[in-house]
Every structure is written in C-alpha cells, then in structure tokens.
Length: 66
Image (tube, rainbow, N blue to C red; front, side, top):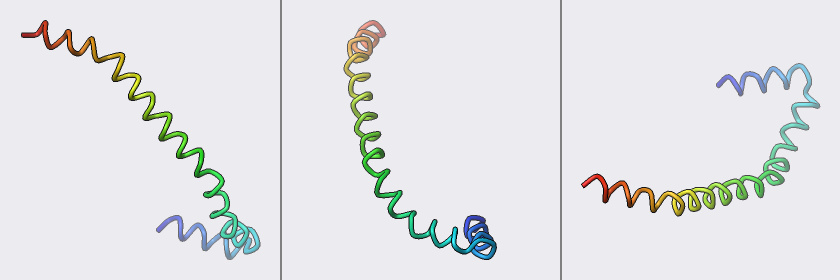
C-alpha cells in the first residue's frame, strides 16, 4: 500500500520520471533475470559441495554417538 502511495506521489510531482520508471521496470527485470538464475545455481552447487564435504563427519558422529 505504501509503495502505491509513493508511486502516486512520484506520478503527481514528476510524471515523466514515473512513466519512464514504469516502462523500464520490465526491461530491468529481464536483464537481471539471468543473474538471479545464476545465483540459484551457484547456491545449489555450494550446498551440494558442503553436503559432500560434511557427509563423512556426519557419518562418524552417528557411529560414535551409539
């Protein structure tokens, strides 16, 4: 709700800037989309590597805890 009110205030005070922002938002979103996908991929790979490295230690904890 607050974002809508701020956008309306921007539209009243500087309508060319508001219309430009409205038109450029999808373009910026499309440009940034590959970086978001890359971030998900890198995060997944890092979790996989962490799991592979931690697996022997987790196995030893279970054996030693019994």
